[in-house]
Length: 536
Image (tube, rainbow, N blue to C red):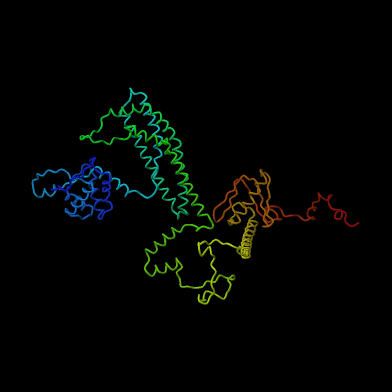
């Protein structure tokens, strides 16, 4: 039993070309069942399951699969090297127990690695991924620490050195992966011809700010990392010797063991080449700057496309997506009407071009059979370019705009005259209720008075002859409070009086006539001669 499942190991005799079969379960029929089986095998360590146990586990996830079908799926995974048959004990107490012991399976190393990567890809979002730029500063500090230990071999702490080396290479791998993912996302967006509007504005902010932030961090930390790596080259053997002194993994059959990064000269050579460029190649920091310049160039190309008058204008992707959503929710009749409205698929009809048309007798009711041909410009007919060429169009008549502006100015003047009349009739303004328009006019006049005189020990008068209103502004020991429908206005330590231009101030004595002015006997000596002397 189960003798047909041999050959599922990960031995060195595996052909690299055959390892492509490890990915077959993702794309074949019933791929969802294969993915669920591999999920169950990789969720714990050293999982050893029979086909019946796999069938029961999938039933809890809502996937109905008989034990025979589960065994067939597992057999296919064994053939593709994702699973391998597991050793079993043929001695079982009952026949029912034999059902759970025959043909048991467990995941292979390569099968588990592939499934973890497949799961990561399936769960990955399509958006941008942040770059782990903060790891560069940490790498520079760790390399300085490694260099210090390598220069003092007698005091090397091998465990601490191994932790620092592993952290450096792990950080470099994660940083490089995040950089590649980020720029792959940039390239996928920049090649879109429909990038426009708010989406273009947000992406422009991402590119100009975040890419600049990455480039700044790389420019600041990469020289320090490169300097430490170059200083480590003469003492690298001491670092590797200290790492080799620690207990490691050895294969019983003499096969090569995949060691942690940083334990070989080639690992350090690759790390140095990433920052220095190696044998005439382009270093990682230089590639980042080149990629940023290329992205900015493509961004400017899209901007020129959107701003060029002869271009096709803004993208219509959002409009078409919205229209597709309407079609998806509409009925048959509504879809036909929507298509006709969106794409102009109406019955043939003639549309008049106005007074400039050659024969104005062709109207909307004229049949195409009877109407004369319409001259369509070559640029519109062949290239879809709607840019006007040739002679300029007629200057529009500004008469209607002038009339509208005159009406608006007349309405504004009427409102200000009403506000001036209300303010002139108010008199003493403390506690007075004014409309917002009259209150705003008062504030304008008060601001003019304060600009004219820094000291208001004497009353300052400001008048507006056009509105026939004047205001006296003077210092006071109390505040002036003006009430309006939209709130109260308090002018601290000011006394305000309003009146019409040319009129007397509120509270002033009425003006005396000339005869009354000289009626006092004490002023008899100042009377005019005609009044004092009388008739001779």
